[in-house]
Image (cartoon, rainbow, N blue to C red; front, side):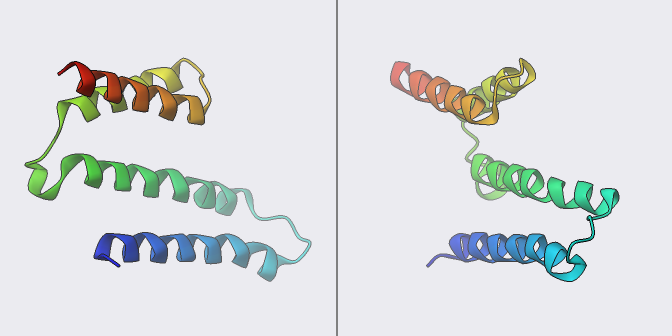
Length: 102
């Protein structure tokens, strides 16, 4: 297994552990609002980091303009209130079409 996949698995396990620790430690008491807000931001932050490292490549030398266009289209779709899954699908379609044309 490559170092990237090892990191992904470790991050997933840590995220799962943190999310499971709240109910396990608090029992039936509600999670404080501030803690819930921080926990909710873990997944988007990790996803953004993985996307940027995949997009940029080592040393930002392999940046691909078709991926940048796809990511931009996902942002536009998400800002137009499209669900996250639809935004990802839009990004995939735009990237694939641009690569097919070029």
